[in-house]
Amino acid sequence: MRIASLVPSATEMLFALGLGDDVVGVTHECDHPPETVDLPHLTRTVIPPGLSAAGIDRAVRERTERGGALYELDSELLGELEPELIVTQAVCEVCAVAVEDVRAVAAELPSDPRVLSLDPSTIGEVLAGMRELAAAAGAEEAGDRVGREAADRLDRVAEVAAGDEPPRVACLEWLDPIFVGGHWVPQMVELAGGEDVLGLPGERSRVAEPEELAAARPHVVIAMPCGYDAERAAGEVRDHAELVAGLGADRIVAVDAAAYFSRPGPRLVDGVELLAHVLHPDRVEAPPAGRVIELEPRPHAELGVRG
Image (cartoon, rainbow, N blue to C red; front, side):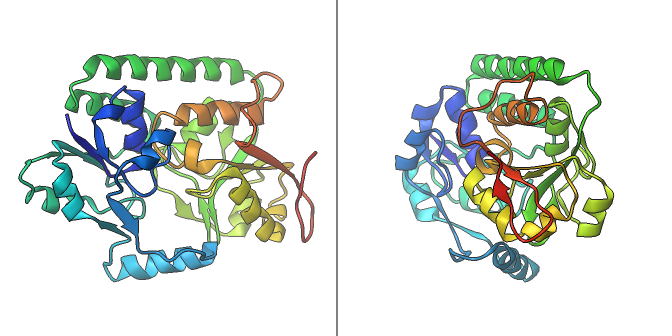
């Protein structure tokens, strides 16, 4: 089957299901596994590069408020690839080409592809979506196997992390303005043996004021700016050092959100394991280097790397 993936999480799912050879086109943001980089790119962003966090937020708001698209779809290339299945999403309007636009383009293609939109808000829905994708691609057995393995890993980490008084955790999905992590993130914190003091499972991410965050009295702040790796997340924390330090947390941690938190795909399980180590380092093995950076909280100006 010829499959076009218009969302990075679906691309990761397809490769995890052993369907990588069926993928004929991906997005400009697909970077895992590495072989996806060489596949034809079907999308591009209209947000200019090099903007600050506030600049990105402002550009996104300006375009969405006037009904403009954030991504452009190369419909000509899509037609040349003759897909039989197109995978997209509608859960986040700033993460992919609008599903209505995808359906409109697909309706004009000679290959008459099926359009499958995966729109999870919880970890359970992520795993269910993986099985739905597997069924659509004729790989039901792989879907059952991969889903079962993911569920088993989540059960194991939850069992290891349970027991103590859960630390109070604040997950920041953006820092200017401050967005509190939602959707599957609060569940990830709970499975990792923590208590998300701001986010609600299955609910959308939302803007929060610094006063609300400080009043929540988090023990641990997890900086996970959407689409950023750990180094870039740590840079954002340093750029907003006074604000983050003012939350009064004992620990401040920057993580690779692009890989393990932003995308509702197979690597959310790695994200839960990562969080479990952050919250319970004496019980859960450390993740590979580069996935998490712990910063030394300071009351003023700067945040240094905790050595």
